[in-house]
Amino acid sequence: MTVIFYAYHETEACHFNLDYFVNFGGILPEYDYIFIINGRTCTVPIPTGDNIHILYRENIGYDFGAYARGLDFFFNDSKSPFQKKKKGFDFFIFLNASVIGPITHHSKEWDWVEYFHGRFLEDPTVRLYGTSIVCLPDEDKGTRGPKVEGFFWCTDRRGLGLLIGERTIFMDHRTKESAIVNGEYGLSNCLLGKYGFNIGCIITRYQGMDWRKEINWSCNDLKHPSRKGSFYGESMNPYETIFHKWFWHHQPTVHKEIIDKHIQRKKKIEHVKSLNLK
Image 1: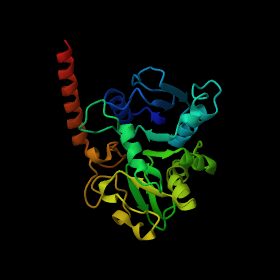
Image 2: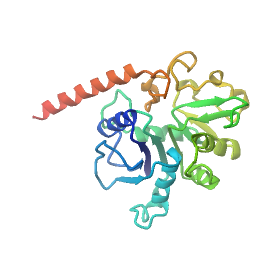
Image 3: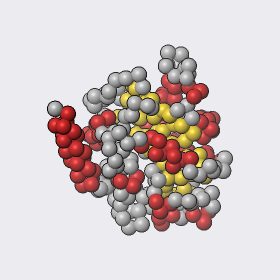
Image 4: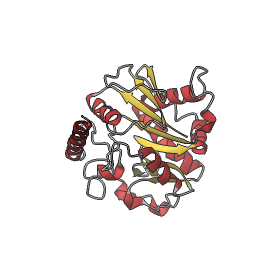
């Protein structure tokens, strides 16, 4: 079984992304979702259901503080509905509201969760999988080498256990730098750097890459691939990443025009479906 942890903080961009998630195929009935609302405010109507759980908390700790709260609810809360069934879960997806998705030409009912699970299982050496990977330079505080970018990632039960065991990843980070260095980059530093597992991502160009080999540690000229025009001179395609980060503070948007056209197309399809039902 799979559970999805979704970290949210109310901003205009995050509202836009979550609204898409709940209305265009993000929520599927066969999976459990834990939404963690940093700041206690969420103006997007999240559907109700036995598989949907919403936790409200103070705006502290950034995304990994939110995940820590979600994991505590999942594993430790005596009132949690997961107490009797948590041992049956073997796949865990984490994402925040800075990404929009699933972006796909498939129908609204397309099982994006199973798609990522299948991609994760393709390589048995992989314990951490995401939408993109950045290679950091020697001088970066996050340590040199490849890191799965932290806005969307997934792992299995063994991988999650090792990450929780670090005790420096899922916590209320006091600064944004700590949230990035110890939280986001801590994922890869733990599973790749400490335990020697491979990591992976959905980008076609990186398929079959063994990130344990240092010969691969200078990918993309050490640039963050998710920024505008910074992936080998281009911008990553939302239809390839499926969950796409289009907004960066104080930087140009990344393929927002594709996102807008995609949403218009989805709305037209839903409108036609509604007419056919009448």
